[in-house]
Each structure stands twice: as C-alpha cells, then as structure tokens.
Image (cartoon, rainbow, N blue to C red; front, side, top):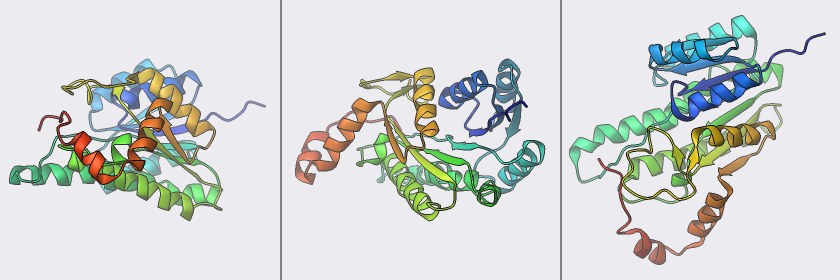
Length: 254
C-alpha cells in the first residue's frame, strides 16, 4: 500500500523563501498549494517542481480569496499536513511622516492579519482531523524594536505573540503551531538593505532549516542558531544600553 503524499500549503510562494520551501517539499514528493499574488510567477514555479502543485493567485489580505483557495485544496486533496504562513513585507517607516501611515497599515495587514487569514480557513478541518501543523514566519526583528523599522518590528512582534496565543489555544487539539524567527535571508526583500547582514543564509538553506523545525514540531525556532544568541542577548539588555547601541544603527530606506 502506497503511503499518502504529504500535503503542504505555502503563502508568499512566488519567490524568495516561499519558492525555496516549495522546491524543498517538492523534493519530498509533497502535494503543494502555492499562494501568492503573481499568477505568472506561481505558474512557472508550479510547472518546474515535478510534483502535484496547484497555484492560487490571491492576496492574503483578501479573506474570500483565501477561503476559496482553502476549500478547493481540501476538496481536491484533503486536509493539509502543513500550512506555512510565509508571506510578508518589510518597509522602512518613520512615524513623523504622514505619508508612512499607509505603509504601517499595509505591513500590519500583510504580516499579522494576513497570517490569521491564512490559517483560519484550514483550521476547522485540521481540528476535526486532530492533526497538522500551522507554521508562521515571524522574524528576529520582532524581539526588540529597530529604528526606522517600526512597522516591521512591531508587526513581527505581534506575529510572535499571535502564534504563541494560537499554540496555547490548540495545545490539546492535535494541531501544532510552529513559530519561525529567521535572521537575515538572501531574498529580494533583503537585497536592498544598505547595511551588513550577519549570519546571512541562502533561501535554500533557510528553507531546509525551516522544514527541519516544522518536522520536529518546534514551538519556537530562531534561524540560524547564531541569531538565537543575539536575540537572547538583546532581550536581556537594559533599555538605556539598548537605546545607546541602536540609536545610530543603519536604517532600511523608506
């Protein structure tokens, strides 16, 4: 008797970490649901994977589109084993500029509300099946607020807290929740950063480590491990020292 294929849904799948995750799971023969806004990129990726991969062109801010994608995937293949809320954006923002208010809203809508929108339509079926993993991609930037990145840092801090709340809610349900906090990954999002990025990982290596954390059901995985040490140190710094160290830190362009 042939074992059932692993079923995995990934948002932000058209490039960067999302595409690398899709390639990694395709190498394991998984059936994939790939979600992103860019239909042409998704179709090219799906065609290149050599496994059953279905593209859903959707903005994760669009609740109806995600509900339709989830319903279609479940009707075709059954309850997913893994849903990865990977889609996210990073923008430099400064509160004193009124024109940045829209950027703040967009970053929160995508990085936080979009994660909720991703999980919600799959969760009832996963709860009924009493199995599966919800994995959310947050960031080390959510550990402490970074100057010039108020929207991004705050959104990732909110994502970490949301995922922890969800993990506790689902503790005895059979559904696991994995929080992934990456450091710097070589993707289009980071390639415009005008500063050094210590412990930089390729998207392919990051995807491999993400999947390893998901497979073991880690409650929280900071990737790479060196950034876990940095994160722990930053958490322990008194505010006065942290402020002095980071007030002149390089900032992401607005």
